[in-house]
Image (tube, rainbow over all chains, first blue to last red; front, side):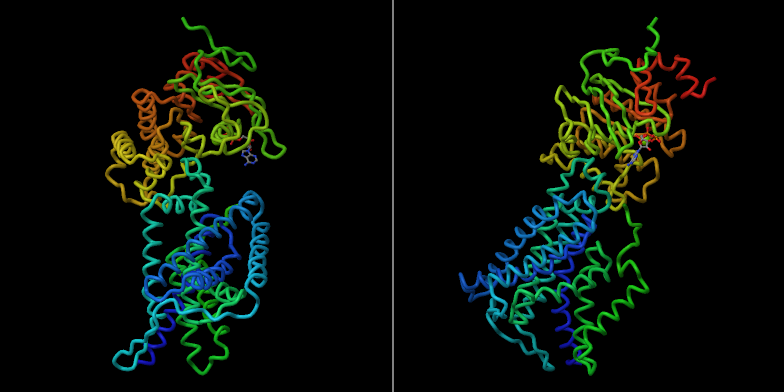
Length: 297
Length: 256
Ligand SMILES: Nc1ncnc2c1ncn2[C@@H]1O[C@H](COP(=O)(O)OP(=O)(O)OP(=O)(O)O)[C@@H](O)[C@H]1O
Ligand SMILES: [Mg+2]
């Protein structure tokens, strides 16, 4: 039982990170109907931003850790806005394939710029929060780093939920996602709302990058590739464009992955996890919470 | 006696009273290589209801879409309150005071009634004014007041049209453009919607451009009319005159 709880906890903290990344894919898809392949590298930049912020003003407290988290989120929000402004916006009226290829280009650019600036070798990620482990009755062990993930992720999700459902820009995001032309016709400035969407998604990816690195303790310029791919798949499984779906897909993938990893099939973890996800898509082609939509041309 | 409507092939814009809120001069619009508008000129007097009628594909929707900035003009000018608005973004044009209820309504089916209306006021920074405008829309369409949190996609056709008009009013337009508001509505509802359009024009002094297939009704509530055919204005004049015009009667009013 304790073993099960422990695995569930580990799975949830991994899945929370996938969820944070998946949200950015799904939100950008919602407003622009395209997959921002550079998103996984924003996740990496978020981790590095945390690393360098901590070098600059080392954190030794809860508040310090939170400040670094916030700083990294702000930096990546800005990065997301700049990427959209420079790379995607000029191609807004071109075919989606052009934008997709550009996104892959931006992704490679970030990865190689990262290798150039930070070096290709992994760096140890610092402890941003005071290290402690809590042992519960029955032997369940929770570290502060895991706790950070399990407490901060729901808070971030709640904040996102509030923004998307209750604010003017969040409502505009949903309006654009339904019909961009109708949205401009009522006076919504598409560019501003799209920038806002990139800022939001990138900030969450940065949070994901930091929370992930806290638990894996090593960062490198290519660290985003695999989690990014998995988060993308999670977003599709949840129903691409659907925000709760992305969160659900991420959590599910994290839990499945952790449980398979803890079993005797651990060498085939990713294969099995992906096979399960493909199975879900076979039965629900639009994803768990998505609705099938006719591709608009 | 009013003089008979002009039957010249392309009447000069000054055939209508001066002081236009919107003036279109020699507007040409293409979709790719296909010409949808071939040099139309319109003059919309402040405070009037002006209707555009014409067969399918005549270019009515294209005219409204171009005014709203959704399609670029190849040639010509669109002057709103004396200022050329060609080249502005759609949201900037809304900010200037031109609002459109598009063909097919395009309400946000995934948002609630209230959210739809609030999106209409996206550019309005003052909450107090938004509350006033909401109240005005609710007074006009009490059915909307009863269901602010209903998902708009589940509204009846008539309610959706009310919502589309209400949403367009939330930006406080000086010029409201409606593209076939009667489309798909039962005759009784059509009459009700047209009554509301007349009321908006009367009570809020909003200038209105009304695109309609239902030429009979449109000429009844409008002050002036333009008849479009394959991207050209072929007739223009006072609506009362157009209704008596034999050519209009035969082609658009179903009278032989
Ligand atoms: N997106 C488009 N691409 C190519 N041609 C178009 C497009 N939209 C409209 N057209 C063409 O432009 C012409 C004018 O169309 P428009 O929609 O303005 O007509 P309309 O007067 O509104 O007709 P209806 O009464 O059927 O709504 C038509 O010949 C139409 O086929
Ligand atoms: Mg039309």
